Each structure stands twice: as C-alpha cells, then as structure tokens.
Amino acid sequence: MSTTSQTHPLTGRNYREPIYFTRDGRPRFMIGGGSEPAGVEPTPPATPPATPPATPPASTPPSTPPATPPAATPPATPPPAPPPAPDDKLPEDRDALVKMIGDLRKENASTRTTAKQQAADEARAELAQSIGKAIGLVKDDEPVDPAELAKQIEQSKTSERTAQVHLAVFKTAGKHQGDPEALLDSSSFLAKLSDLDPNASDFDTKVGEVIKTAVDANPKLKAGQAPGSSSVDHPGGGGGPKRTEAPSMQDAVNTALGT
Image 1 (tube, rainbow, N blue to C red):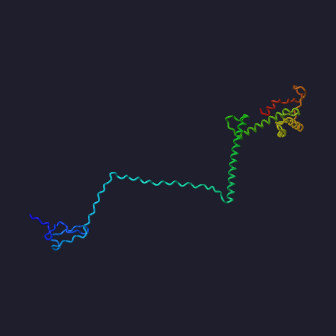
Image 2 (cartoon, rainbow, N blue to C red):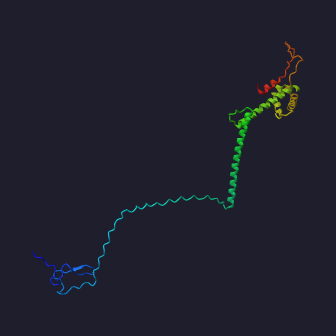
C-alpha cells in the first residue's frame, strides 16, 4: 500500500500548511502542483492575520430570579367638585331690593301672627278648661271646647239672670198690688226689665218701679182683692171673689228655675 506524499514536489512545502493569509485572516493552501513557478516563494501578506476576537464568556444566569415588579397603582379618583356656593349677593336693582325687603317683612309678619294666634288659642283653651272645672261644667279628664264651654256659660248666665228677675218680681209685686205671675207672663213687662242689672244694689227698687208703672197702665196685672180679713171661703155663694194668696218665695224660685 503506497502512501501519498504530503509535500509539494517543487516547493517542498507541506500541502497542509497555508502559503499565505488573506487580509481578513483566511489561510490559503497550495493545491498539488501549485500555480507559482518553481523556486518562487509566495509573497507573505504585508499585514499579519488579525487575531480572531475572543469569544466572550457565557453569561451565568443569576442564582436568584429578579423580583417581580409591583403592579402599577391605578390613579386615585379625583374628589367631586364642591357644589356652587349660594348667591348671597343683594340685587343691585333698587326696585328688586325694595321688593325683597317687602317680601321678607310680610313673611316675618305672617310668622309672628301665626305664633301669636297659636299662643292665644292655647291660652284660651287652658283658661276654658280651668273655668269649666271651677264651675263644674267640665270634668278633670275631659277635654273642653272653648266655644262649647262659652255657650254653656252663656246659658248658665241667662238662667241665673232669669232666676234673679223672677225672684225680684215676686219680692216686690205685693208692695205695688201686682200679680207676679201675670207680670212675668207679660212680654212687654219683661222687655222693660231687660236693661236692668241684677247685680246692682238698687235692682229690687228698679223692679218695683217698673211693676208700679205696669200695674197702673194695665189693671189686669193687679192682684185680686180679698173680701175681708177672713180667708175662709163661705159655701153657698154670695161671698164674692176668692182671695188670691201671694206665692211664697220658694214658689218664685221654683218658677224661675222651671221646677
């Protein structure tokens, strides 16, 4: 088995040795036989081949993984805008200002009137309650209507005055030969007594004067005359009219009160 020579027959160089390097550092080898004439050495490159760049070392990953960045915070919601302040400015127009003052006065007057009316109503109701309890027309636990109580009081006053008038007529009728029952049945006589005050000190005297005037003007209002000093009636006729006795004071009071 033959072995191929690795040497160029003319140059004596090993085929595997580069004969020169290019500018970028690549080697050029001679192929068997070569192209240069025998005995001519190839011109070495003027610039030595550049040293190939060193391979950077492989980066070693960090043993601790990087921390996860915090999540982005959303922007804060802006606060709502405050409501507009009320307009407290007075109107610049003189007429509008005068009208505003007038309206305020009316409003204040109405408020005062309402408050006074309410206070007066409460005072009236309290007074009516007290009066009603005092005269026995209202019970302690019974609410009172001032109008109804006033009506009852008026009726009570009328009844009281009627009793006083009737009592005075019965007291003074006999002094002026008057019939008290006939006098009290006369509307014209009672009309003359309507202007008199039963609480006056001379009330009985005034009633007597009215009775005398009425009896003198109308004989029918006189009391009947007795036939004599005896009050015994004689049977069989001929005795004349019976004597009419004047009613007692209690009868007068009962008549006035309707009892």
